[in-house]
Length: 154
Image (cartoon, rainbow, N blue to C red; front, side):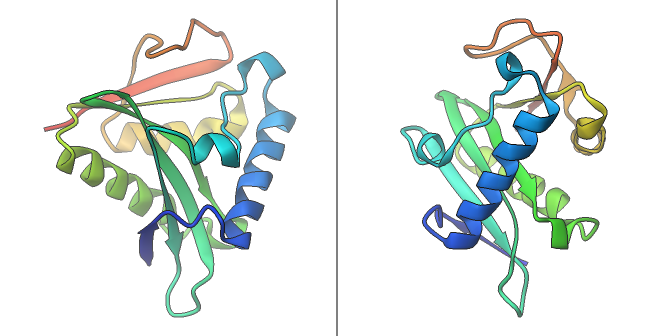
């Protein structure tokens, strides 16, 4: 698998983000959807990554890092394509994000995910990679439909 920075303009990436947003609207109450659209993912303080399977160069997944503070970043838009699920894409992408954040000198990596069963596999993935539940961070407020998680880096 090859992980690249950028590629928001790729049609497969656009399709995966559209699918991600659709699923968020189908599984979470509107007031608890914190997913970013393509414009948000390309905004200031954002770094977007896409994972491509080799040798066929099919999109396997994506994720982004959002700078909250100089040494604190948030994971956004973590998504594995349906065709690549169960192949370790999410773990590889998460390890990449941890590595990038660490290399940038970040000391904290955080995320928000849902409480619904739909998000259970994601919560297990984050726990396996050293994340623990935490209070809301950044501009988030307490939300009974959200789970906030963080991991210390360095």
